[in-house]
Image (cartoon, rainbow, N blue to C red; front, side, top):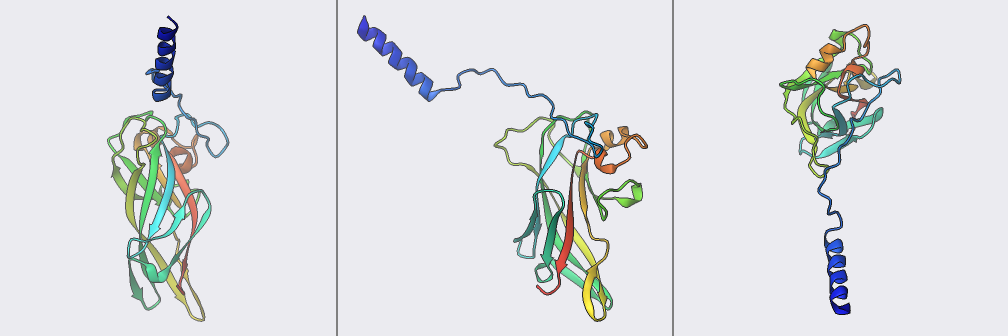
Length: 214
């Protein structure tokens, strides 16, 4: 009797060690709210969070990373993927990769998402933003934490002007990237929702610069 009881206890202990989480019931996660610029919760939970933005050079090497809002991004001119030179200035081209992850399901279904850019950090008028990609496909379900984030890539053009006796200066460089659900964006109409960043599902600001001596 004692031998049988001991064997049963050992078997139970072994099963607990090899399968410590035996409850198959999935955990239901509530929507993660996000705040607007005025500090209030957005009426529709943000679908995404931007993880890392990679700025890459001609050999596909990472020149800089953006992991939080407001960071300074400085790219060496010599590492540009390509460039055009004019008498009074020119353009530098770099590859950019935006890694983002879904954190909430969509409040409104959309056939595709879009990535927009702006040369100011708080656009409020349609002419202050430019569409980079309007055919981004993202699955509707929340991903497993171990799954790689979504990624969208584009070519960044930075225009500059030459000034006699001084260093070249960038002309209206990019300062903001936004991921948008076009349907949700249109639901959040002005003037109630004045800022484009409040209407976006995720956004990232940065201070763009170029080292013309590197």
